[in-house]
Image (cartoon, rainbow, N blue to C red; front, side, top):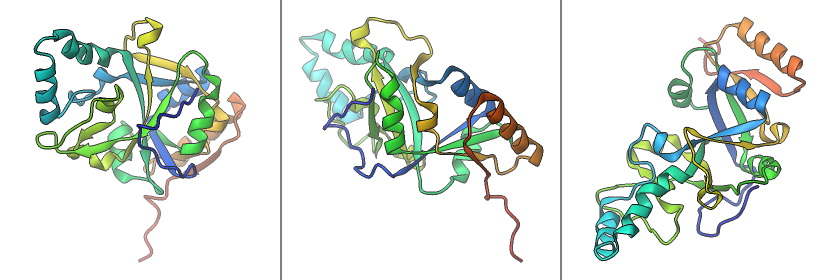
Length: 233
């Protein structure tokens, strides 16, 4: 279930458009399980996930001088945090298609902040928080550590193009071990507003996706991306 945290930055406009770009196999897994996969925070390719900037780390080291458990807590806490990443953008992103779909058989889920929040109502075992990622210079800028979620809401400026908003879950209190991540219950019809087909896909692929949706009992709007539409001259 979505929970509000006043420390976490999130637009108040619930109609803000968000996207998730993924391969067909992952999309089908979402539909068939009706569960949203959240990756363990230290399993992302970016090794800085859930870590601190240099100025913050130096301060934490001083505080940990007489209390080594203080620093160890932050190191092990990454294994207890699960994250689902979304992209904020009013329009499709060519870069996101390139990065997050492996071939021309990918697709994108279009949703909104409000739909994402409501879709989480079905999950009663874990609380979810939603926040926008802040992009900073890790050599110069400070990351607050008065909230345990802050290390997971900051990334290096090199990743600004992602324009990321995250669903975050902390399983520390549940005393469970995360392997690759966590699957949480979601209302699929609430979550998905529209589906976009990869811009380089063939017509047969769009027809296949439409037929799969019918077979599974879903009635989403499905459009072919217009990033590869015919030029006008």
